[in-house]
Length: 239
Image (cartoon, rainbow, N blue to C red; front, side, top):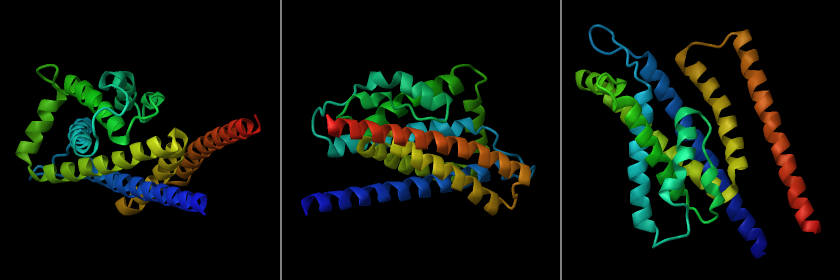
């Protein structure tokens, strides 16, 4: 009975994580498209500094995770030290995949991972955008000053990112990186469909074919990883 209750609770937490990741990042995708296509001011200028969104999200998530750790974590929990996330931070900053190297510390909390990743993401993005006199960060700030209405869309964007990251790192810390990969990959496909429908720019048959091939390949890779994990777990039970 206790095992059944524990299994049900685990399933409910997983469903909660799926709902959180999907809702936060699908809406964030809609906001990103809005920011990239919306016209501002009488001259109809576009906000072309989308890399600035990554920096804003890093800063907000860094502050949020620090507050959560201070509020709910007591003392040292055996997690990864902040400096150990530097290489994972590079992966997260320059590519779409989440760096999960810090998971080698089994007691690392979701907020601990979030703090380390966003700390290094903030450092890298600050250097990239403000490291020289004509960096794109200065242009982004100037655009926001000139058209304050863009700040609201950016605010909603990084709020979605903060919520989504909470669920992503909760999923990784509770269920592992493979479960997170499965959830986020399916979410990306749904994001494409939702974005296409809301923007009024339907994908062509050729584009749908490309989307299908990409996600079929990713889905097959995920399937092979689940099969490998299942065989490893079965082998452990027999030994």
